[in-house]
Length: 301
Image (tube, rainbow, N blue to C red; front, side):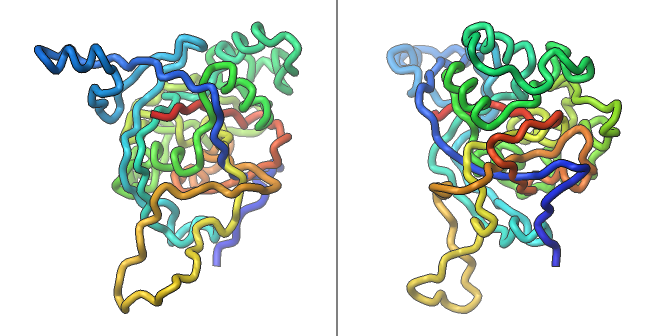
């Protein structure tokens, strides 16, 4: 029996989910429409049908957001760690947007310039290997990520949203498919001393089904949820289902209301390949700051 991992390379691991306010419904770029359809779309941009992978830019921080439509997918893995079991079918009834890449140092610098009293990240401009403007920001707590998202008019993704954006509806093991990780798809397995995260968005071969980048490796990513080790275990049914009946689909699962740790996902630049699986669940205490922990934003439809 695989046990839930608690620590790797001297760093604790974690998971969680919370919805935030202050979102901005920026209009996505759509192909031109003709006739009555064009008038309808102009009068109500939300009425225009969004395609999976459609993109728009957040004017606040310059981030590109990718559209993930409502859908159904397999969450978890029966051959994973105990906190990933059992695999279950999950249905999301609403689409959402998610940042195409992690938040970079340059983006976070805009937030700090607008919030001069906010604490700087742990390694901010002190460690050259972590300080390039185009590297993902690291050394940030969960509350730092929340503060940034509020400033940018977004929120952290829920754990369910994160996994769906990473693996799509076909149950793939990694964001790109079933092939094992290599340097063309993910930044991982680098030495703790001398290693560093890379520029987000450069490894097209590692893109998820929706075109989201760096969801395996580079940096762990905070999610909004509190971590619950037993979140996937089904509650006892009021009526015993008939033999050989498939388990019910879980629709819009709710995150735990309380907890001690927050969910993190995705693996990092120095984790081994087995920590890059899209279903892998980890957790940190909210105040944790490490050189391989960052975040990306999300936005409700």
